[in-house]
Length: 417
Ligand SMILES: Cc1ncc(COP(=O)(O)O)c(C=O)c1O
Image 1: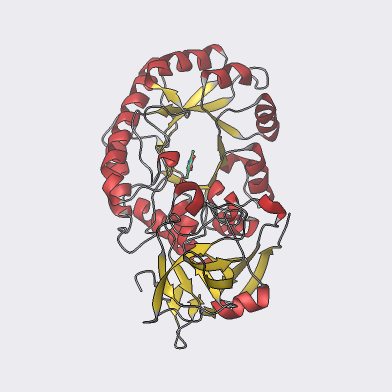
Image 2: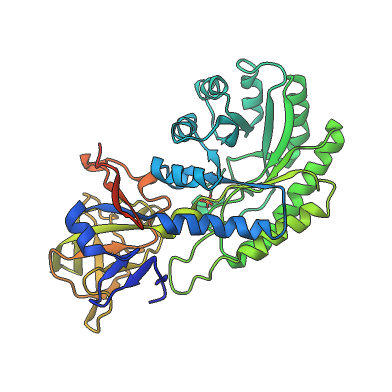
């Protein structure tokens, strides 16, 4: 199978799905469904892969884990031990990160449509603020004292992402300060008595090898903008942050993300610019946790309606990506991974919405081994933007989450409303 990863996700001798050597059917039986299962080693391996790629070309970088991808406290603790910093998008995320052991100095907040109360909470908690609008600078004056260090998120004019909803730079985008206003923003920061120490971009989420070229073009633009800012303010910026976005293969035809090309591209561009002393920051989320998580669901209905249907006990309240973005997720019948007896099915969730399907859309049926009611269906690559986008729609609880490691299986969050 294209998605098999030795030691992490495998098909065992019984033709069952195994996560870090644990039979997925047994996990579903013991912990119930819907169930998010996270593989600790895979999280560590993914983080280490990014760190190694940067270590090869820089000795001055930091990796902020974009915790919006998966903010389970145990996941945060694992990455804290690995030396991660945090990218938080709300003051509440910052608090969760601090509770998980991150010192405030390792947390950066980047928000949009940020309210006064958000700003107050951030300043009170001593969290570094990456500013997204001129309005935010003016209102931050009410809460921040002289000399507060801040950075600016700008819009480098082009973006990339797996879906239009996840492109966060370019035209018709709410994020960041456009080039035409960057100079005024810098002036306003100075007038307000704040200290500008960094420039930030985040062009979008879930881009792959084919978009690395676009990304590196934005790296050039951001370096160019940072150099102009340095000239204007008369001192060096401490860091330059290139955001997150590296994608993962969700289907057989997606290419593996070229981490080395990405890291080398960033590092060499910074090294050959007047910003060579600035620290490089990146903010990956999906790459670290995406393929480390699997969602297990019970198949409760197998029936030919006006279309062959597999009904499961979760919906877009459990995993929003298929309905929200039309995202493809590989699905596996856990007790019968490989089978010649396959058929096209609509994989239907349990919410009262026609759009509540796990296939890319209602008309595209998914070829799967013909299952029996009571079997377990695994939705792969559900570790990022899975639980963190889950809701209690239809008054159903959010699912339980478990973490699998070499020692065993642990519940890391109970089912909750
Ligand atoms: C500011 C910022 N940084 C980082 C990320 C992480 O993106 P990804 O999970 O695709 O790496 C996001 C995601 O939307 C973001 O908004």
